[in-house]
Image (cartoon, rainbow, N blue to C red; front, side, top):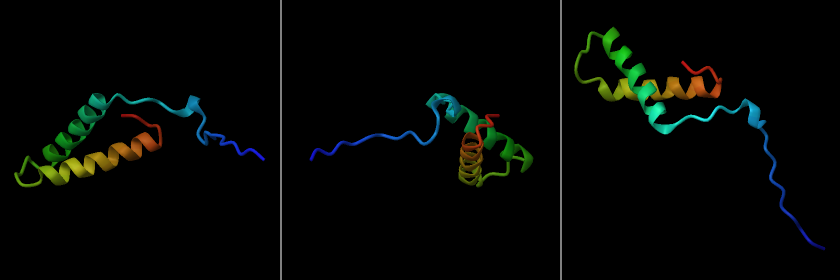
Length: 67
């Protein structure tokens, strides 16, 4: 008896939009910038802004709603 492995693509390729990594970082930086701007650029929150921006960006990508 031979066993074979079959790959199954759960998400159709048509629904996947590839994202260039430098573009990804640029968009995250833009989102983080606007978060800082809203806060009046108060120092000490840069990492928080970046992490929140990453999460927002990942949600947008998951929903395929690129900003």
